[in-house]
Image (cartoon, rainbow, N blue to C red; front, side, top):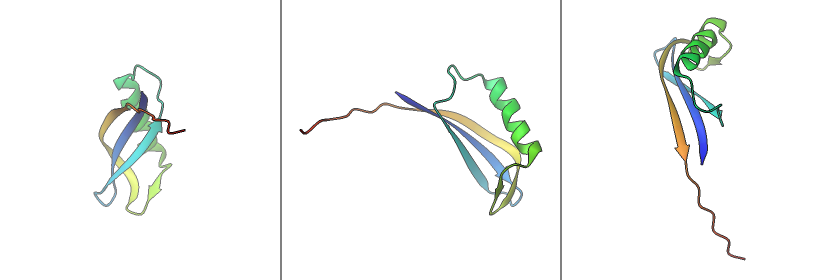
Length: 72
C-alpha cells in the first residue's frame, strides 16, 4: 500500500493549489499537519501562477493498493 498526503491551499487569486507528500510518517497526526500548513503559508515559500498560498483548504491521505502482474 502506498500513501500520499495531499495538502490543499487557497492562493491569493482564490484558486486551489495542491502539495503532495509521498510516504508520510504514519499514522498522520492531524494537528501536526495543521501546524505544518500554517508554517508553509506564513513562510511564503511556494509561489504559484495564482500567487502565494494564503489559507488552508483541506488535507487528505490517499492510500493506493497496487497489484503487479508479471508476463515473463
